[in-house]
Image (cartoon, rainbow, N blue to C red; front, side, top):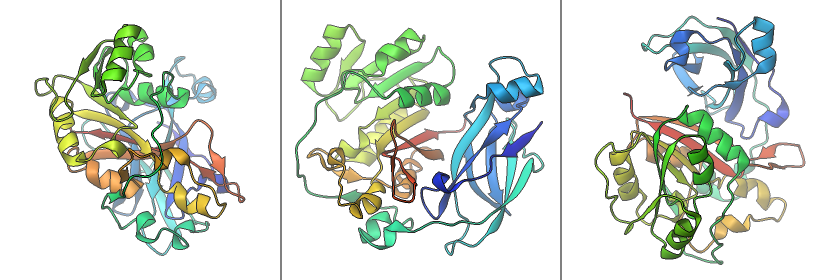
Length: 329
């Protein structure tokens, strides 16, 4: 097995206490069956991913079969609050739970500006895991017929190959349903809005209208649940997640990333979508992760956005948080 860490660059660092780990690995059969790439500093695990993507250049160089998933990327947190340099080790967590010897070792020296100290106070503090709420202002935008191409790609990567039974909770117009159905997934949309349900019926997409309090399905009825741009609208997110976790052992969540606020404030800009009237919850990686771990022990956190904004220093601003949550089999 071979592994390397791509040399980190300044634009990879979105937060001074969080860094991007990206590289490639020639996976073994045991890894493909349920392993994960993990980043460690001493005895502390800093981050991990169980989702790989194709790296044709690597598979060709190593003589691997075409289509082998060999690339990985994930965000890891800094092991200390003072931003000191540290030694990072990459391991593979095998399907049987054992951990490999270090596959790669590198020294990480963070260099970044902390935008969180100037504005928004506790909202962007990584030690604050409470969900932030506020009174409604601004207007509500319509549901979307077309989803993000990048997110559609990430969904397929983290879901794994079809067939899988999927429930898309708060699916709107089913913007991801058509593609997933075409790929062979057993997709079902769930929606409370009668107008959205009428559009789902017009489009011929399988759906179920619910009352917003309970899901009328048996325990474990689905292999995975999707919750795309929904959790920020939910008045009682814990009751919502309790019901979702009852019917699906895996969950993929996308929410607006309120960590952008500290960056955009310096440029006198505000993302209008984040201030929609129906947005009652505001999430950072830390608050979203803490909430999801109440229902799913394993949570992987990252970012996504089709067109990242950039600061004057070139740091990418990712508009959405992406979380992949699961219960061990």
